[in-house]
Image 1: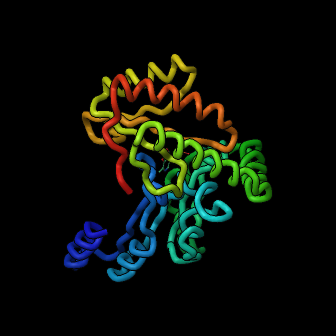
Image 2: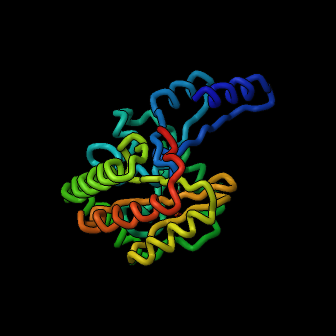
Image 3: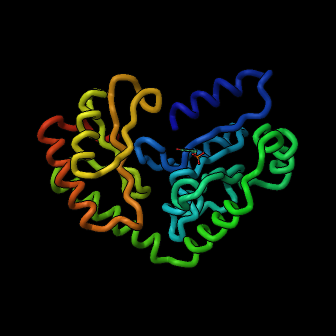
Length: 246
Ligand SMILES: Cc1ncc(COP(=O)(O)O)c(C=O)c1O
């Protein structure tokens, strides 16, 4: 937030720059960190900047009903543009933009992906509709996700003493000091029949590797026990560095 304010100060000192849009993830995709939304919005407003929050990793997960960081911080209507994807919590494809009508009208006439690309087929739209409604109506899904997440994180904390970022989203990052040790970790997980996202440059900085563990509502506690066993083996052989702090 200190950097954001410093950049906005610089930008506002340039009379040629008119409109300013500041963009953030709700839950950061690699670290699982939560945006400090009240500060983000306060600083943006102080410098007359508009705000855009990408809820890809927060919609369906964060907030009482899973409506994302806007709900979590109880700040309805205070973000100018919300974007999100149907490809994560909802298990589909495609995404959405939520904004006031003038912004949506503007996008409909200027966004190349909207004007020049084929729209999503109706069977996909019907599926998205069903997935979102199921998620809203069946409160057990989000409750199960949270139970699973808490179980997994407690397991990992107890067994491996890995520092845990704040438990709001579902992303559990484990950092490795090299790509080689990350690849060995992925091989070990595969031997335990576990598939897990391995992240390297350019998604994160060069030279380190990151295992991005994401529990879902359909995992079972047994799945996590198996993961813990595999992680204990990896920790013994290759070691994690540290989990990025919140
Ligand atoms: C923060 C963030 N925004 C947007 C996306 C894009 O989602 P999609 O693959 O549905 O286009 C991703 C995908 O990983 C993401 O992490």
